Image (cartoon, rainbow, N blue to C red):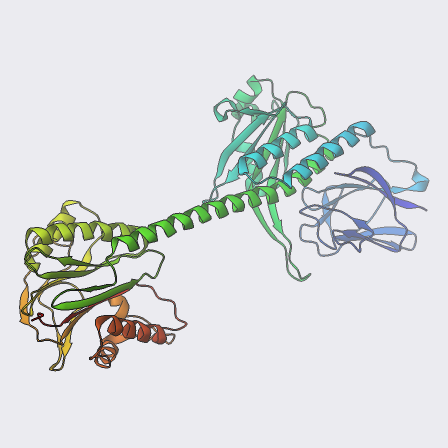
Length: 537
């Protein structure tokens, strides 16, 4: 007896003879019958000839093998048995024996109709390969689906990050975009298809209880519905690994006339289209995300340039002092800042602040604080008063959960240094006479409206220098998760006592980089060095 399979899939209807004792069926090229489809395993099933009988056996496929609607592991085949691979099936197989005569199943489409459907499908798949903009890809998918299925309308819903379906685009025959408000339909069928991952065909909306939830659709004369899931299947390189599947949305079609919309070949073709559409949609999404990321990176690059422009030059000098400062953001932009002021009374003011947080919010606040600091210092040179003004200004703006540690100092030509430390790391005064930490001041700026700030005046001698640093320096972590610490800061500075501030700063940053080599950092690194040189005679 000559056995054969009548195969109906996206390629049309054809007869495949069973000429081997073990006839393999699956997605892999080495099978006797190779079929595409998201639910077809590489080695899905086989038909075995034993003692004149034919047995179909499931080969531990992921979605199962079905004969006449029943899932099987092994079953003897009879003439006319219908075999389905997977739950929805990417193809319909009918087992035929030559002695029993031809299949009695009536074709649902003519040969010419099948060829037109295949041509429409291939055109749609070819167009999808060139799509880059998401809306254009969605339109291509729906236009191709309407052409393949002979439908009147179509829409696509995509899942948002929370897993809820959102209406994206609707089209009508003739490549017409429909406003979402004009697309009358219920969410019941799309949500059911998305949840189960199985296609849904409704032969008549007037049957059962569907008419009650599709009254708007029925009122338009729409009776027939086909909805398929958009499944993104990522195949693995190794046979023992299962392929990854992700449902990203649904493709919905409906029509007034039954036409080809409800045929098995249409369903197979649309499932093939939906599988490729899911890949095209995901690629378009990734392409858009790439463009948005590139745009964001460019904007961040510009923001970093602006932030650098707002800071003073790293090196500055006057008749009785020299100074250097630098900041290394842990991201493209940071929340640390420093500033110098040559004050009207002939004194020199300097400040270093560390805004809570990272990235753009902290950078915006640090820029605002620079302006507030410059304005406050020009009104009154006393550091305690200036810091108090900045504190009130920040609180008045009610910026939630945003505060700053700040140190502001004023140096006079005769070596008097007046400073106010507002919750900042105690700066270091270092020179031939030893090391001293300076802590006079008050709490963090922007946290308490009632806060008061004191300042302290100390006398410097020529050659002494004053070092302010953010906690990104002292708390910088090594690959072994050890902090850099204040002791290493002092050690670095003492090794360069006879050097200028720029050399001292470079030496400190070099030590920090060596210490943290290979370890990611989570805070900005900023330091400022002021050296009192004495008034020029």
